Image (cartoon, rainbow, N blue to C red; front, side):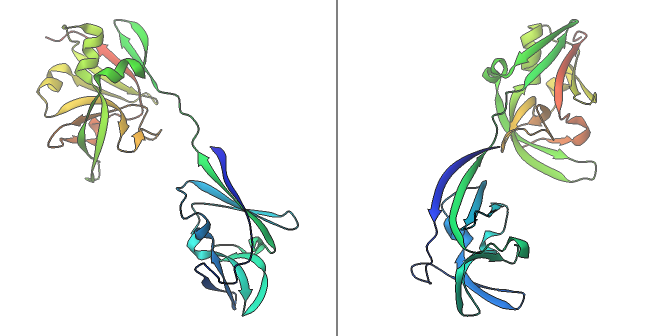
Length: 250
């Protein structure tokens, strides 16, 4: 992840003027101050908030924290105190006193390299870049039923398996298309079965969240269509890295 500094705020006590205060009870004491969430209400996660006091000590919180439950307190039991970080989710050793500045940094995901597909055809192993597959992309909805019977629906985008076969075999389709996962697990599809099956089987690399993460991608086989066809989980190969063409369609 890359950090991008968005702002540095010099902290000035508000004394309750022009802002919404929050009161929290911690270890028998009542603190009143400004919710930390008010400093980032216009910033989309993920981000980090770093607070520094006059002695140069730092505390950093992420956007995963419940910032509505964290305040920069200006009063303790009705008595004014230097701005202090407190909250029900903040351990006592992080109750930073005398806060001077608040820094907000956005977390930018590291640039992900486009996946490369291996294709084994006629004894030749070919590396296929995503840019060569994009022109054939098909997007649609599909359902997957797990071994426990749980059904999930999603939107997927990728190249139809039969179009991928045509890229390497022209009009003479192979007999079988096999998807091989990174761990060696394989799922095979007879071309005649793909042609007659409900929906369109694709080799997907995107879902509704964007590029597939490592738990499912870089590629996954699934059937899509309208209405969404239902695929048994064992037939939907995930973490696919290689496609193998074998035989000749009869």
